[in-house]
Length: 164
Image (cartoon, rainbow, N blue to C red; front, side, top):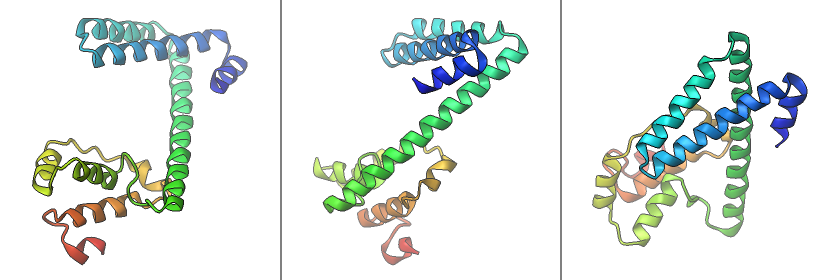
């Protein structure tokens, strides 16, 4: 992994080992939690906290910066991947139905026989967490998602009002 090489070169093997231990530990915690292994997940979380709390402040700051750079690189890679998928969908004539978008999800729900009322019941149970950086990926996803809601006839998203 390129980031690992840069960390080793710029900050040394010790920081890389701390970053990798924390990264692997949080992955194991997430996997245990996903499989309903709550005690194991709690143990991995406690180990991660112990690792961070044991670091000198200077090392903890470097660890934080390393993770910030890691997540920035991940976000850039995901943005580029979304752009490539969006372009491929446009070229194939399926623009607006990208898997994972609201429009794509509503389209898939309709395909399996879920109507607007049932979809609205499902959506009422969804926790929506705004993420600021998503709007900057250049794809106009928010506009397409509002239009998808309008196409289903959801209240407050009727006709041309939703396209304004």
